[in-house]
Length: 610
Ligand code: G6P
Image (cartoon, rainbow, N blue to C red; front, side, top):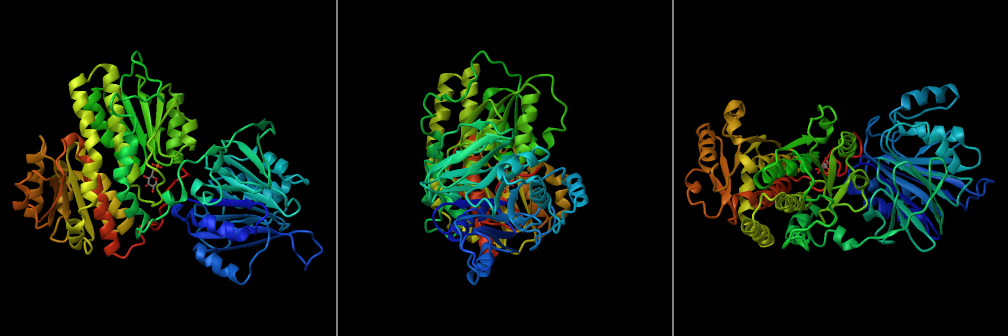
């Protein structure tokens, strides 16, 4: 989703803005632009002059435009756009400029009442040139501008409905960038005699590890050596910076061809990190759930891959805590009828910025539920919307396709389920001890999977020419089938669907041919025989069948065309090695198909619009 970067300081802004913007490429975008206040203008009588360039396409494309037209200046803003209102095009790209040509603005989010505002502004004589909601903002600020940019921004935002992270510069106030946010992420990077703004931490990490998180409905005036934060009424807000504990290498490829592969290989370390200090006596000091807290059930809410982790969580919670557990897509939760009982609501979001999940968190609280967020991003928006926060601690994830964050979410869900089961007295010490011991083995289980990719690389040859691929699983590996299919379609663009294996015969079977591979996920438990039958049904329709099963399964090679094995683990934990295999299947298939992998078309890492 759109990326924002800003710089103010003693150095030339352009190279810093371009370099930082590149670190936000992972968010997904279709156009890029830059605006700088040039103070060495000789052509005009002005002391400083706003100069901007923008175009549809990549940051490299923008750089090639700038190659012959370098903009000199020490304050500037830049942007990558992910189209919402109006297709990708030069005129719709950011920055947007006001009628005077002095004011530039970049925006991430959606201005919901832009049509009403647009009519009023047109009546006042503003000429709107793009199809975007964003351009309305720049004219609104122009309309309210009376020599004080921050005041004009505050006044304008009071009339705006919707989500925004904005950065604004004005050529007559070259000593400042004015920024504001509501529902879309924005951070301020604190340097020495220079300051930065960005949508996400990796953009500023090369320059500073000190970061201030802007909260909703706050604006900030960022100068070389000061950062002033206030609410929309102008009341000052004191906020200290926080030190980022990871470094740029954590967010770089480190010799891997793609971030996605690097992040899959980091899963061993990531699991250890999630478990660190939490397994033994499982404690979540960050949680305020006490033994006398009564929940009548658990509801888990999320989007995308996090939704699939939530579905796996349902099986884990029901098995261990005995509490009825439901899962809802965040975008649908608001339409559901509130239940009579007050459940514990767990919101899962790796980014902490997904607009639908944030809205669901607010709705859950409005309904009187106790809320816990599972997120990977310290200081992200979700952390301000819930009662309790658990960080999954897997480090930065750059590839759009979520991998290590998914595995981190699963491990956190096991821990949380064991914790709640123990608090509620549903888990006796001996079985609890066994579960924890199994959790401790998972890093080495995953290590064995990632160190043995040859079978996977060989198997994917049979997938690359397929138009449709079906994934089937039962019980706790039904969500694994959904996630396997999602991963494949996201990055290889091959149509893939996941089904509960028992549903194959209620429709999908009609689509099976020799060109429709079926990937079946098995574990040696009470579901095994049934899924083997489903696999045979698929084979009888000439579909090539690929089984993913545990090492001790010595029957399946007689039935399936190909088999991928994972190290033996109790079936409750099988989604972990299965997830890693499915991620590698998606990765190597996409690689064979020649896809871009880390930045799949049309997708964004962090979806900040509803
Ligand atoms: C986007 C990403 C997915 C992610 C989903 C939810 O669609 O491309 O990888 O699973 O958002 O993101 P969240 O940050 O809430 O987990």
